[in-house]
Amino acid sequence: MSGPRRPPALRRSWLFLPGAEAGVLWAAPGLGADVLIQELEDFCPAERRPAARALCRDLFDSWRAAGALAAVRINPLEACGREDLAAAMAGRPDLVLMSKVAAPAQVAALEAAIAALEEAPGRTEIVPNIETAAGVVRTLAIAGASPRVTACLIAAEDLAADLDAERTLEGTELAHARSRFLLECTAAGVVAIDCPFTFGDLAAAEADLRRARSLGFKAKSIVNGDQVALVNRLLTPSAEEVAKARRMVAAFEAARARGEDRAEVDGLFVEVPTYLAAQRLLRRAAALAGTG
Image 1 (tube, helix red, strand yellow):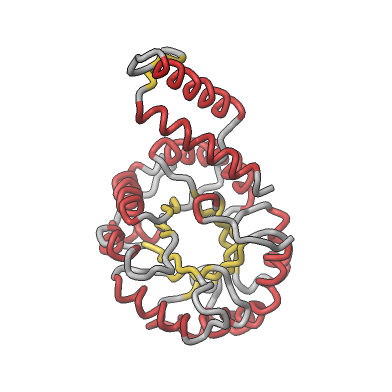
Image 2 (image 1 turned 90 degrees about the vertical axis):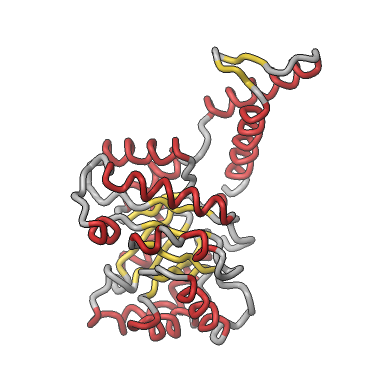
């Protein structure tokens, strides 16, 4: 099932897959992630990268045919990223993620490298991966460095290491960085992809995702395929949320028709910002329903 590319705002689940594990890669569409990412950086030992690169051409077509977006994460260009990119572009990836982006110049260099290789000019999107404190505080500039940038992704383990932070299930050590990252992505007009939950506890993964959703995140990176269904479910408006949003819209519009400035639904005052948020939720629910 290939067709129009799923819009950036509707890409909920971003699943990283070990770049040289052919069996895992070919079976990946069955996990249901919106975006499948062949990982050529940390999940792919250097000695296996040539074999991983050889998979790109046919792999990405297979993923697209199954209805997923085909993505690749390459190493920084100054490392072995140019070799990664040359192989990946043979498969026409929908998106190129680059690790360890800390400055706008890295995005500009990647854009130039992609432009020199792609068959259809402008079709390849860029997703910078923000993995250091320097990258977090420059996210706005990084996101604005190329019109190809449609999203940015914040890391967990590399960022925690850069901060010399102690990792916890609750993720309090990354809370400020994640919030700032979301603010800067929103200001830049690109999708903020939250960091992966790198522990095996599924209940804790759900709690982490609910916290991220409450902040405003609508996309989540994943390194454990068992979390895909959870991410898709929690980042899709539920039937109850849709019903409440409809009540809020109807109540506010009825109040305005009576000349009143606000309405009340379930004890919550519905004013203009709340009304607009309810409308956005309904549009998102309808759009996701249309993606199949």
